[in-house]
Length: 539
Image 1 (cartoon, rainbow, N blue to C red):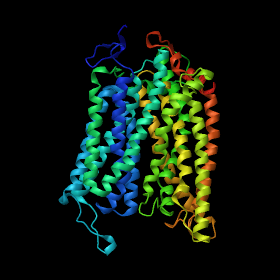
Image 2 (cartoon, helix red, strand yellow):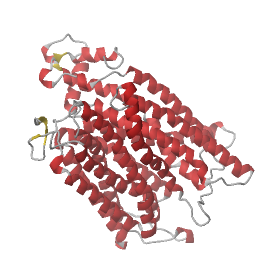
Image 3 (cartoon, helix red, strand yellow):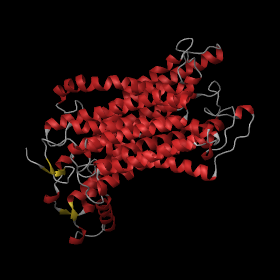
């Protein structure tokens, strides 16, 4: 086989398809993905306990600190995608910021272990006055925490993009393997989440947070070792220079010269305009997944509180921790994803002719449709639980809560994997990591929207209802109306699905049809963007 001039080996020479790329090097990247999500999820899932009990921050401040930490990780994924595509390349971005993340875990472990770096221990239940972490102690904590956020945010988009880079999209056989890779990537993600929500959280609870943070550091180190082990087999796409400069040039040229006739000075290359068109065209698809992630936020917050208000006994001597309810979707995904890729995709491919069985857009749509029923199940359960508690003084078994998690797990298999595959395949050459990073921003915006919705619902219902309190005002779910909030989310989710159908049917773009740089023509950017506006997003 001939060497590929568009990708390089570890020495900077053209890669050889017989030696570089394919599923084997992609598996090393999947190793990093599984270990990284184990490490970061173990910290995130129990962080509020450490912040409140060890650092003695007030509960409201601790909750905001955790949500800001999670939101920052996902927003920083844009930085990781930009640095990778523009300057560093995916491999070096992951390696550099992987060690940044590792250093954050180590610093967290050291602070949790050394008494002098924390406020003195106290027990607020015994009436003791707890001293909040301030000064140098608080600074060390925040430096460690945001080293983790910076590292994780910059690593995340590159793992998926770099694994996808190991396959040649112009080869039909490789394209089928690329679809399998995205399913395998979500399988690795699910395994990592499940291990973090069970084994690693158990270690933190029973051995202390210092040991827990140390285990996260060790797990992250294992992920970096996995990445390094594949060095000789990777095919690397060289960075293209600033990916945002051509976009800015098109926008400036289009709007500054929109009322002027065409002239040589207003002409720019056609692939620059195509970059802007793609960015504009994927925004509606991206925005339709924000409500989906708002529903995810409920399963990680209010649904856990539902579990706390139920009978958690599995046996007389064993209780299910309510926080472990979040592992239910990932248990389902570990079984469903391999079955989906092994049986459903080949079966559907016979009828559709699509290498993924069904197109990513159809996959996303089906997932968004299912998400509505997750909230319907949650609303019906909460009504049943509340009536049993208030009217009959009975406590329902926690097993009643599983349907809303199982339905969302199935929904996530379609939506999340479909979204990642869609953004990767629709991105232009040299923008894969940045486009993958956009998908992570949906998580951030979804959680922020959840916070906004809760505040608005409380404000509106407290002023419009006869009682002074809103639907979600009390810490006691028996006094709140969480069921009505779930119904509101179900309605929003269905409207969001209809909105998605509108935009997905108007989307008709294929990056493979774009002109190559050496055949690029010069065009008037404003006329092209104007045509774009009148041609259902993409001509």
